Length: 307
Image 1 (cartoon, rainbow, N blue to C red):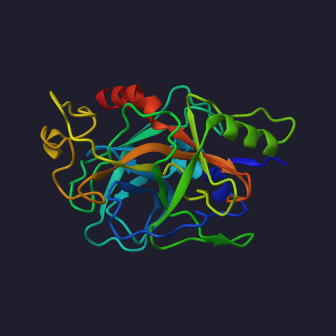
Image 2: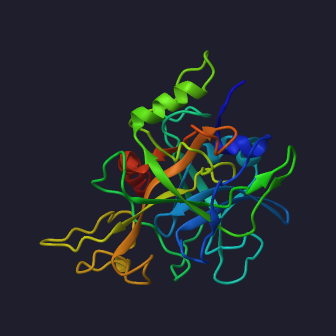
Image 3: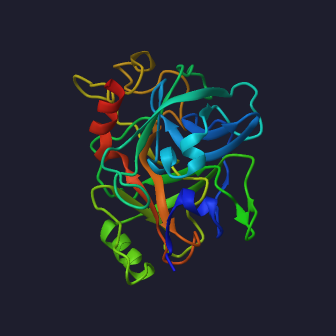
């Protein structure tokens, strides 16, 4: 039996579908989080998470763009400023997806390059509840002693047919797993006839491998975030991600958002990964969560936005 699934496939099937070991996030403490929702008449369904990186673009997983017929054929909206998935009043902003840009090397299913941009029809209006997240630069591909979080609306628990989906946004602290250790864990869990899909350039992994903490169904495409200290600029400060962020949101003196403070005066959130795939059931001992490593796709992101 195949134990490896992307986190959207698990949601569509049966199994332990949940953001495991998490808790409810403080409302609007992650103003970059976006719910990607399919729409049929007056019915909506959250299918994937994403992270707002500028006023038009959301970064998510490529399998969230076309992996199922529902996603391929139904119109999709990006919902920002949301905490409770059933509440659409202010400060929530709903924006129709105009274009889905998958990485050209992504071949579908479980594999490398599982990353995509979703362009909205109209720009988002930045507020305290809706802001872009910073993209990584000069990061080690394997973050270690950093505060890492996964955020999403993945199911809390499930029966065979009916997953227990949360109304409110959830978050969970996770720990980075070095690539070689993660590769060996996948080797031990996959079927003997399967190749190991983990890719050193494309993927990041988190645990802990002791079990009980993981991202899973409904969390696909959602952000793996690093909470890091802000390093004050020295000389000739350069605005990071000039193509990504609206220039008016930054000052050269601060090198950070003018409006609001992500956690505290001296810390900021950085988007390290997007939830890609894992091992079913989620949160099992020895089962990592696998992400697409955003730092290795900055050129793709910039090119897609410019074109």
